[in-house]
Length: 113
Length: 119
Image (cartoon, each protein chain N blue to C red):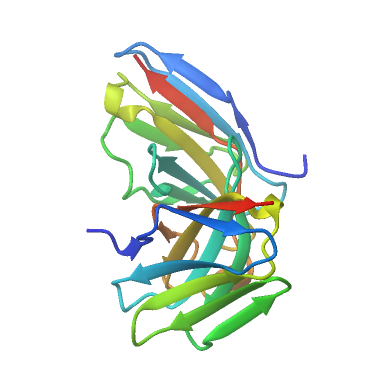
């Protein structure tokens, strides 16, 4: 039973345009959500997070939106750059679980120059 | 070092062999996690340590998997009698705090992983 789903295996975007990566979850207990970015042969690196008391969190070019009623979150990257090309993982947790994260399968983002 | 260090980077084992994977967390990080990432999937939780105490091992797939962190620093994940289905990337991660509200400001820092191939 996949509690965190990233239904798009890959996404291709032109440099300078917006990239939108989506994530759905099923466990209503989740109250903390994160995005990790992963380059080949490297471990995932933390990108941005959001708690369930917010519906938006912004950090530079990266914004995460949370829609609790739809159990859906998205990551927006504006403007997209070729260096953003990587695999993006959505992850979720709740307070008792802390950093025991549940990950989605990832979305490969390709930013074309 | 500045980040989480894992060794070896690659390990090829014949089915039935025992393997040991090492993790050096970031200095001062209390919490240490092991995750398993199969090809095309996201990381999946295996086990968690707070200092030297293994507080959660619910993700270990079988009793062939064993992890330890005897001095609250370096950790070793051991897999006995390896099987082909054990082939995966094993990721170690550490954080200052792991549970409760504090963990929300203490995200996991991952190492580059050990890619295990069982032939």
